[in-house]
Length: 193
Image 1: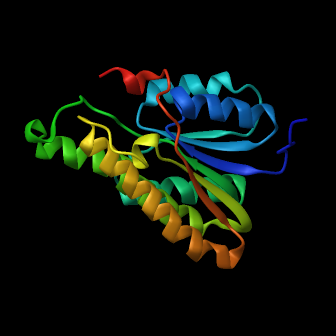
Image 2 (image 1 turned 120 degrees about the vertical axis):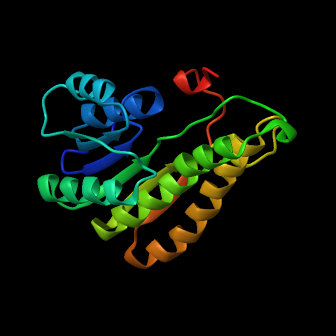
């Protein structure tokens, strides 16, 4: 038995492909109204078209840019009403390498998208979320165990887990659930290294 979500407004990052798009399609099928966010305009437009009828909106947003995130969530709240939920799925996993070969650029990019992106999103989402809402952050099994040659990616996902635990305690005062899920390797474009 599927739960109907006909009165739910949900924001999703990383919504143009992979797990984000699959999640958007499932939520739309159950009746949710969605605010899709992604960095790729062409893929985002295709994703929006694939959802079928509904009052869904799509916005190009760079999750590392706090101003863009705040504007996207403000737009979603204005057009859809207060948020009932959010799925923060945008992420990156660049080339595997031992730490001795890692670059500052890879650290900054990976931590920016995977950790700062979720920080930016939750900060904006909680300002516009109904009490009793729910935020789901996508971490990784890499955020629970160390994996050779993925130190930067794993560090970013450990940050997501820690951030989620802290914010869950804050948001609990408003009965907002904040959780992280930690999937294993999934066949998406993220795996194209």
